[in-house]
Amino acid sequence: MDTLRAAVIDCRSSSEDDDIFIEELNQLKQEQGPMVCKVIFQTLTSLDIPRDTAVEYWQKVLQHRQDLSLLLARKIDLMTAMCDFLRSETQYLVNPRLVDVRTFERVIHETMYDSLTGLFNRPYFDEAFEHQISLAKRYDTDLSVLFIDVDNFKDINDTLGHIVGDMALKKIGAIIRKAKRDSDIAARFGGEEFILLMPHTESVNAFILAERIRKEVEQEVFSAHGQTYRLTISGGLASYPLNATDPKTLLHLADSATYLAKGAGKNTISLYKKDKRRYLRVKLSQPVLIKELGFADSRTYSGTSKDICIGGILFENDEPLPIGAHIQVSVPVNAESPLLLIGTIVRVEAFGEKSYEIGMTISFKEMEKIANTEIAHFLREGL
Image 1 (cartoon, rainbow, N blue to C red):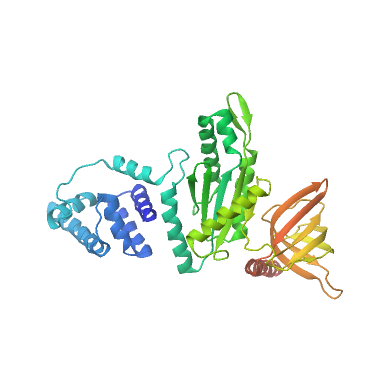
Image 2 (tube, helix red, strand yellow; image 1 turned 180 degrees about the horizontal axis):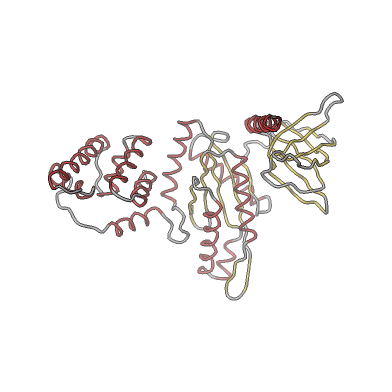
């Protein structure tokens, strides 16, 4: 419900007048259902009115506002009409009290946001998470959740003090807030733990965003008491419906993947996998040709494959390729025709000068999408 309350507050702050505010609230009600009316009264009056009664009262408030405006020959604002209706026509507002809206909204803000980082707090995230899972189920969309833990944070508190630690958390929160997309929900989960909810995002694209956040934290220079230091984060990623369909289970899996990242040496992002061997892996040492998609003049690289499975391919190359790049890999598995694979780069590791191990994940859903885009581009070029 806090998610709807935030939407109501956002409508209020962005609306130039009450007419626009009412129009946006009615649009929100049409999109999210009758529960919006209950939240409207909770947000604007602090009254807990049953949902069906709130739907009835909302229409009566709007009519009451029109009647008062005609009677007084001037436009009556929504809060005046709502207060008068609830005081005169119901038993809900027996002893009304005036409160400045800025004071009220500050109280609401404090119940939703973490005071240190400015990100959402844990209670808000828990409710938003449940709501977003419900939407993903309803509309059959993907959703990913990233659990983030600051590596060796206790050392910062012990050596530099809790004030410096708080400053570091604030800075990491700002990095997450800047890197995330508008539709993502970022929260401080507790202590040095953060969480990022990514609606309409499958695991591959979520991993790309998670990697960007990890790198930005790694590159950030922190300073305290005249000295500089660096921090890293470890993250665990789980996705709906790939890994789980229940919110608590999905969160637990993301948390479990974080422990895997810690165990792998920290400063890394781990994708949750129920069984790392759920796909049959085959050792395949073959020359491969790699080409980045989306560019007519993109260079073709020569590499060597290491192993292949249904989920992806691992190969070596003498030059790094950007994480998130869509590529085509041609594998000459037989003399007649090569095996063409389309996917996304999710891992690049350097093992020396001009020696890189590159992991490409294969999503058949993404493969179809990318292939269609490439075909459309080819047809446009041919016209």
